[in-house]
Amino acid sequence: MNVSHPRWLNRFAVFTAVATLGLIWMGGLVTSHGVGMAVPDWPTTYGYNMFFFPISQWVGGIFYEHAHRLLAAFIGLLTSILAGWLWFRETRGRGRWFGISAILLLVMMLGHRGSGRSDGGLDGVPMHFRVLAVIMPVLLGVGLWKTLRTGGSMRWLGLTAFFAVIFQGILGGFRVANMQDAIGIFHATLAQLFFALVGVIAVLTSHWWSQADFSAWKRDGIGAVRWGFTLVAALILVQLVTAATMRHQHAGLAISDFPLAHGKVWPDTDEISVARYNQQRGEVRALNPITSAQVHLQMAHRILALIIVLGVAWMAGATLKRVGTSSAPGRLALFWLGLLFIQVALGAATIWTNKAADIVTAHVAVGALCFVTGVWLTLLSWRCQRAEVLCRDSSLTTQVIGFDAHSVKASA
Image (cartoon, rainbow, N blue to C red; front, side, top):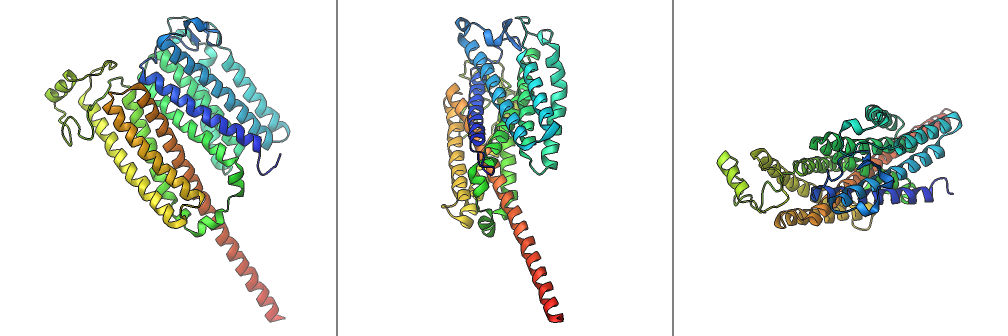
């Protein structure tokens, strides 16, 4: 294996990232169909160890929720292997085996699902899962801190992803056990962040990243727009959180038309108007009546979408002006802009189809792709800026050495 380009490690990281996108898609189906509580217990499935739940009982909403759980367990296994692989590759001595042993111990704890109460509730959650719920946020914070402190060390990046996927699973489980939709918002947000993290690992282990000529792009000023990419990527994350908040209120469409909002540029949100909106609704899956706060949240979602479109268009234009369409940053910026147009179309179709499950799920998945693409461009622009600094420091050092040599020659 080439040391500078771990080919099979990269392929495995790419596979893990693609599978994670599939998990986000499946999670979107669960929420869109409103079947998040089709299986009331966790980490078991109707009292069974979930890995042995009879296929004959995979019917209706149970199919979506149980398939989501199994796919999540598979992603957890992939991430465990990826973290172990990175740790083993970059660590020597006792530290190598200590890290591998810790990963195996956590995997065995997660694999012990036990048998619980089929009616759900916190009483059916094994004690070791409750312990993990407490220590995982701490370990996740440690992983992030070590990653930043070591300048993006791949082994700590992999371990951070490992801690994140465990915490993600626990959040999903406790959302079921507690029957709290608010936890589902954090669960959905962490899913997006985890996807971005695995996507970053896939890029950093690629042959392209190790061979790319960042010094050429820095001369074109890609590093100069790094804060623009950072800001727009952050806005997309805020938009994803806003969307997750709307979905997990299970109130359906707060605004049923587009591009207008209840027939106006800005809808009325007084008590009488909101009561009329609820009477006129044509949805069949909405469990809760909409409120004025939800109407305002939907309008905030639309306004933020417009800002993001303008921001991505601006950043794509700035990138193409600097490097053109033939370079990797230029092509990636065009891909980002194209994704965003698809996302806007899916958002409009979500309203026009009264939240058709497949359309909503595609909207969720493309949103995740928009975010990870923004993260890639942010990473790329900061790497170009770093190349510019290193090049400037190297040039300064060369000038100093040349000046010293000239001085020595003159004195001689």
